[in-house]
Length: 206
Ligand code: GRF
Image (tube, rainbow, N blue to C red; front, side, top):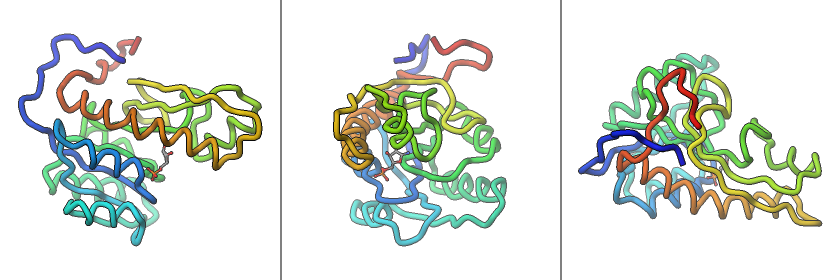
């Protein structure tokens, strides 16, 4: 895990916005682990998804910010919804849109993502299928700070998942998600406690 030099330790839960696009199984894991952090809003770019129901079941406010064909405008509306709810950080959990760089200015060093591969291998939407198609023996999960590029930015933590003979995208993704559900809440909580911070620009993460 990235070391933090002299970072202040938070003495109160920090308030988070979680961004989703679908089933929200990672959101559920994050909801269940609240304590060091509090989820103040769940924002989806798609209406009617299971993740929004999970938020409502947990009495967490929701917002749908539908894609309107302009990344900058979409990002501004998401940041406004998050800030308006009092969020201090954005946690991307299966959010299938790319945020414009403006988000980094609104939430500097405070946007996290989980990705189903060992980045920098297999960025993009079909990370699990790519690993299978390559005949890789090992893949995994990456939690990282978001930067201007897609599925890129300082890596906070990774977990490996062995690829087994006969694996399909579904079986492999299920084992990857089991690791995500363990890793992501743990890392978000450590971030919330002030134990992890994004390295300053120009400083190597490791
Ligand atoms: C996860 O595998 C995540 O790594 C990827 O999208 C998937 C979202 O799943 N970015 P869920 O919506 O959390 O169930």
